[in-house]
Length: 115
Length: 154
Image (cartoon, rainbow over all chains, first blue to last red; front, side, top):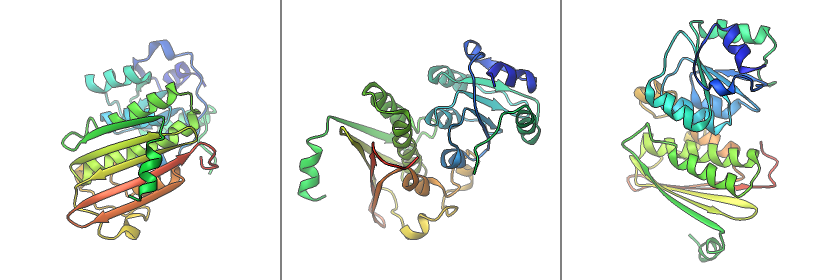
């Protein structure tokens, strides 16, 4: 699934990473606990989260992710946007809640990791 | 540290040293990012680099949460990376308990930031091939981790 499709499905604002919209992602993970993301997610590409701080970007960077979707309409501050730019991460913001945002992407074919 | 380990460390092709600032949660992880870049330039595989970076990142976060920072030493060899994280924090009272997933002594303000779920040390063990914890109450903790390039861990 392309990042542009994720933005479309979630009616999300593209905060940064306009040049990455054609990039393909293969799986997704939704969590507010960064250590859970670091523990369980393999071959991931998109992180959906309600958490908002710079460590979200760092966690995504450690996992070689391509895109972060902030749920519930949260908008990141300049520090987060700047860090994401340096890491080459696209940032999206959707009004959807976590459960619904994950469900919409899953239904559209973007799956999580098989346990 | 035994003498032979010290001697071996002289053979490292790259030695990186970092001060991990304990006052600033925002900057936690900067050393791991730098190591990641260095390993990428040396041509290691993305999966190997990810394991090193995650283990070190969790260690950095731990030092910031529990020990007001510390130092990180990274020794790069052709077939493995050794990470030594040393702090002068409170020490770990019960290492076995601390290694259990879900056990944490982190305060609520850290949990609100997405950490402190009791996964830090287990994650460090999960991604490394060797992990040694030397700790003394009131003195500090030194964690030594080795990640091998030919490991079957993922």
